[in-house]
Length: 546
Image 1 (tube, rainbow, N blue to C red):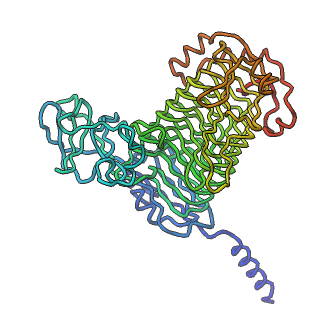
Image 2 (image 1 turned 90 degrees about the horizontal axis):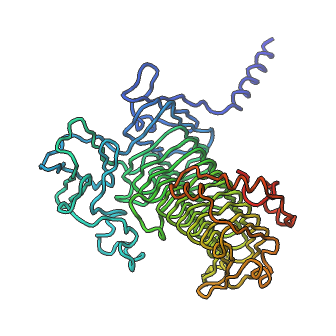
């Protein structure tokens, strides 16, 4: 009679074989926490982390880093999550400063720091080098870039030495191995000095099926030796949820791989650029990149809110509900061979460069965004073809609202059409920009129609060309180009409440005028073939649904 027992054991063995491998529950707490806590440091926990494990980080501030060990990370999902407010800092609290009098303090220091904080406030950097010695190292590989511009790639660098320090600044004397502070204080008692020391606070390579959530990172020291992010991850099927990479010395996030999700996260107040992402089928949802390029890198190189470039940039991806505000550069910049991306329901405002730039790329769908108060063009497509720009509100920008440009650049491999053609611009509200629309001199098969232009004559006359620009009143423009035959114009001065709100750079500008306009507007009779290009849009009144 033992046969049934054998069958039962065999069945149980098959069931357990079908289950995923056992994963460990790990935890870490500052100073070791209490009973039930496995680790007292992030480094110790990460050294033991295995694929499929679940690491819980209890609330607190950690001056440490999350560095994934080299393992095969495929298989069961690996999860790292913060419980409560978890802050990982790349800076250390530094004491034992020597007072030199008149607010000057010194400390022996081995490695050049890029950031120093007094009671949480960043000090100004005097002099300094980045990326392995730029700009002082002879024959540095970045020296040829923009060498005809003062400061090259780093025009915001403050020349000087210990003799030119101003109040609340720091200077690293590499020859003497000394860090100097110049403060509006004569005594550091009851004050905290933090110096950035760790280059990367979250790093992993060849990751697969990894989720990281509910953690904040600050105060990296990445740019002394490398070009990378405070948060740098490479792999596939990675999810970042509620991750905040703020006050990085260069890039906040540098993420490379396919099938990556970044949501409800931020990269704010970073030294160069907030967020860099590359790969296919990625989803960036509900994120923000505000106030970046605090150190004044050259905006035409790589600086601002977010930049997608290198290894094909972003392809077949979505950027939904993104906010890019007050960046010293573009709000968002797709550069070089990005393809088939959706940018939807974003807010791009008060950026020193363009609100949204899609350069030398193709097949963008830019729909239902608000782009206001930027120093340059609102939505800019240089050398980009086969794209859709529809149902956006583009207002109060200091150059044209929407521009498609062809300056003669071509793809040497012939994979992309850089001539700026087959772009379709419809259903947009363009109000009070310094010119509403600029198209290439060769209109080719570009289309603009069913837009609403608001403002005075200079703000509502579409144009084409480069250098010798042809610009005309909407009626004459439509007759000569056969574009904008269904577009409308409203002669109206800028709404005072809206103007005041963008002058004050409010994160929630006064759009009462726009809501009133939408309420009074009737649906436009847009070509059904065009509407198929924006399948999520059902309201054909001009502008986005807020």
